[in-house]
Length: 116
Image (cartoon, rainbow, N blue to C red; front, side, top):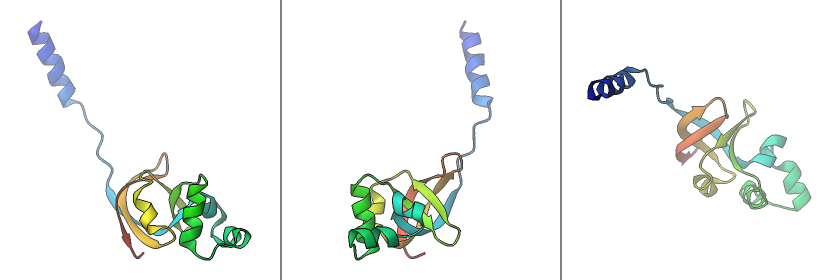
């Protein structure tokens, strides 16, 4: 019985394991998901009399939107798994380092820094 159990464990250890997702850098603006869908804060800022992208992002997240990374050049919206770190960078151009899940279009955020 022990021999069979040891063989089973050994065979499981030899099975291929999925490679961890590669760490990459992504650039864009930390926005709220609502404004990112529109491609800018302009419509929301005008209708709500909001003055800054930061204020717009924070207000929209407070109202239920999620923080996302929006790359204006490619018009790509990346979901962010961490909804705490982005708050400090709301409305700003940033570089996000993390791994990307293509299936969910989500970045597993490791680090966010100013500047894109």
